[in-house]
Length: 168
Ligand SMILES: CC(C)(COP(=O)(O)OP(=O)(O)OC[C@H]1O[C@@H](n2cnc3c(N)ncnc32)[C@H](O)[C@@H]1OP(=O)(O)O)[C@@H](O)C(=O)NCCC(=O)NCCS
Image (tube, rainbow, N blue to C red; front, side, top):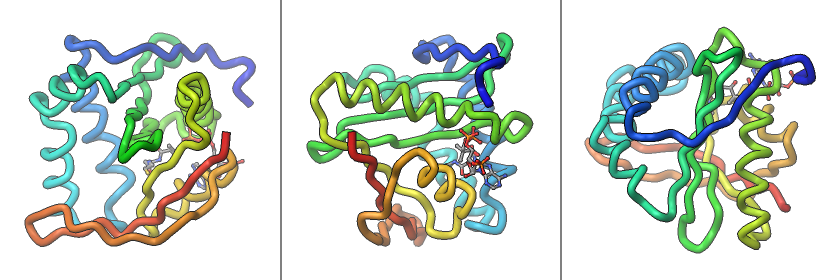
């Protein structure tokens, strides 16, 4: 139930970058051991959540960075983007203390509303095949598996993912 929760969704701005980077590390360290190696976690955090990378993302006209606050505390974020002519939910992360309270669902709806407004027929995402909790959450919000991919992300690491889509 989310009715009684005081959740606010706001765009990420440059002064938020250090906090988003730190929050990503905290959530990834709780979520990904057992799914990918620590080396891959460190590599991907640096690649995707380094401060310079986040400042660049904020400058990109085809990317949207949203953050969620619960009772004023920053608890999660979602990044979305236009990717190969489709609307993609690129990142969705909620702090472990407050998972399963509907905040991820609210961010998904926020992103879906943006895609709908822009006229896209669906939202897509990629999720690690071993990330059963996230896959369950995406299914709950109307995503279905569209394809299976293995992406080389450099330094010998791959992303072994399902691409899922939610029709709008
Ligand atoms: C996946 C994630 C974004 C979902 O956000 P959330 O706020 O927890 O999700 P919601 O409360 O809106 O939806 C809850 C649904 O997610 C799934 N889920 C979330 N946490 C779960 C858990 N600990 N165990 C099992 N299912 C879980 C379930 O399907 C659940 O539905 P249910 O409670 O009716 O069974 C969040 O759990 C998260 O950040 N996980 C760790 C990082 C991650 O894997 N991100 C996705 C990367 S692609």
